[in-house]
Image 1 (tube, rainbow, N blue to C red):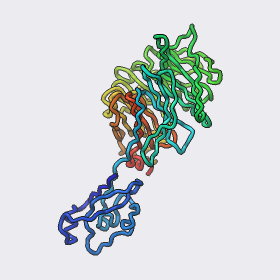
Image 2 (cartoon, rainbow, N blue to C red):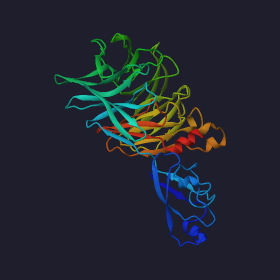
Image 3 (spheres, rainbow, N blue to C red):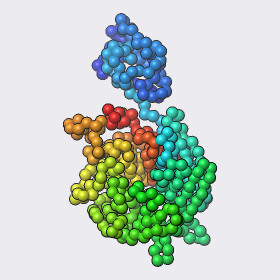
Image 4 (cartoon, one colour):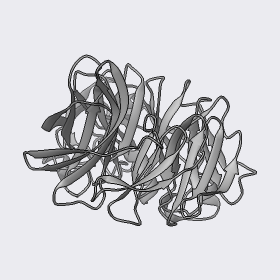
Length: 437
C-alpha cells in the first residue's frame, strides 16, 4: 500500500532550494498509513534547517491525521494531503458456474457468505466462505452437495443457532427440468435437505423467481414465479395458503415491504406493482418504469414506501409508491447493459450496490433520496453532495448476477459472476468518512 504526499503550496524542488540541498535529494520515510494497518515506504523531501523531525516518524508510529500538520513531509504546517491506496479485494473461485451469493446472518464478528452453483453437467454445491478484513483473504469453511441448480439462496434472518436456508432452482431428472424449492438446515457438519411441495396439479408453478422470508411472520415464506405468488409455512413443509396474483407474464423479481405487513412489490416487463397479500388486490401500479423491461426491485429499509428498481436500460430508479407519477431519482453511467440486481445498504441507505450482465459491480451514492444526508447534516452542505457513481469495481470478467452486503458490517459487500468468481470488496474510506463525519 502506498502513501503519496502532495504539497498544496510548493514543489519538492522549492523545498530543497530553501534547505540549501540540491534538488532531488531525499531520504526514506517509513511510517504507517493513518487508517491502514500495513507499513508503507515513500520518498519525501529533506527536512529544512531548523525544523526537527517529529518523534512519531522516527518511532514508525501512525501519523495522527490524513493531512500533514507539522512535519510529515519535512515542512512545518505545509498542509500536504496523504492519499492512501484502496484496500485490497478478496477473491475466491468456486470453479463452477454461479448465479447467487447471499450474506449469512447471525454472527456479528464474521463476514460469511453462501455461494451456490448452477452446473448442468455436474452435481452442484453450496459453499460457505468467510472473508478476513485483516488479510483480505476468502476461505471456504463448508461445502455440501445439492442435486438442483441453485439460482437463489435466502438465509433465514431469525435462525441464529443453526442456519436455515431456502434455495430454489431447477431439478433435472429423466430428461426433464422442473422448478425446485428446498429447505436446508446446517448445524455444524450436519446438513439436512427438505424438498418443499411447490404446487399441486391444479396450481402448477413455473421457475421460481424469488423466495422471501416474511419479516413480520416467523416461519412463513413467500414464493413468486413468472405469473403467481404463493405462501408457504416452513414448519409443515407444505403449501399452507395459496395467493393467486396475476403479476404478469414475465415477473423478474419481488420484495416484501419491511415496514408494512402483507405488502409485496413485483416487477414484470416494464411494470412496477405493489400487492396487498391479505386481499389479493393491487395497491399501487406504475407502467414503463424502465425501457425494455425491469429486472429487480428492493425496498429502502429506512424509508417507508420507497423502492428501487433496475432494468434492461442500464439504469437504477427510485420511486415513492404513493406518488408514482414522478421518478424520485435516476442513476446511470455505471452500467452499459442490463442491471440485474441492486440492494440498499441496511445501515446507510444512501449507499446502493448494483451488478449487471456487463460484468460490472457499481457502488452508488443516493443522498437525495436517503433517510439522512451525508454526515447527518442538512441544508446547503447536504445539497452540495451530488448523487452518482462512487466507484466501479471491475474484478469480474463474466456477467455478474448477484451482489449483497455483509450482515455483520455496513462497509463490506460481495459479488459473484457466472464463471464462479466471488469478490469481496469494501466501501472506500473516503466515502465512509464522508458519511460518518
